[in-house]
Image 1 (tube, rainbow, N blue to C red):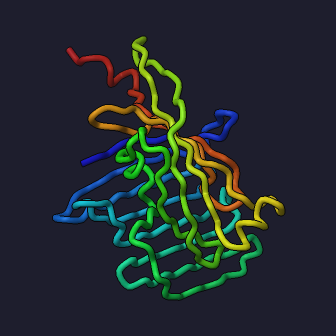
Image 2 (spheres, helix red, strand yellow; image 1 turned 180 degrees about the horizontal axis):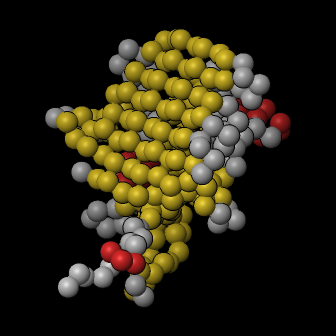
Length: 234
């Protein structure tokens, strides 16, 4: 269904990682995989299995983050049907923590589905709210509020196009949500740029990939051919 190449940069435009995204259908289920291989050997890998009948609904989710680019190594597994959540993490000092718990998970859980959701959000809708499970390392549910904004223009081969922008605010909720902005732990907003029309697609994405981390930029990438491959053999 989908196979694309990605590039991850910091906001100074330095390339940090190369990545790939794929979506494959198996009957009623779609498996979405996002992988980034960092130059320092770190890895970020997300696998989300979901259904998309009358609505998009997450079935299982698996996140792996490890290496120098991440403050904490994380292995998160979520089974939405059973509510089982497993978090295995290791801090900077090498101390490992394992959490196995059962939670009442909402039907609109959006882990690993940000691109899929943005493909389906109507830019005329003032606000779309979904849920997300985060592990810090204790798992908890937060809300994502998606609102449209101006996306500006871009060009392809000299032809100008208009982008649709979205901003995603993370609402922690409860007393933690009140305290977080005061102590500086409120997550940064996520910004996304889409091409609209009958087949919307993500163009650019800026977000933190882990709690307290820097904002990184993700963009689609095109293959670069070796010069000798461009010449036809006679």
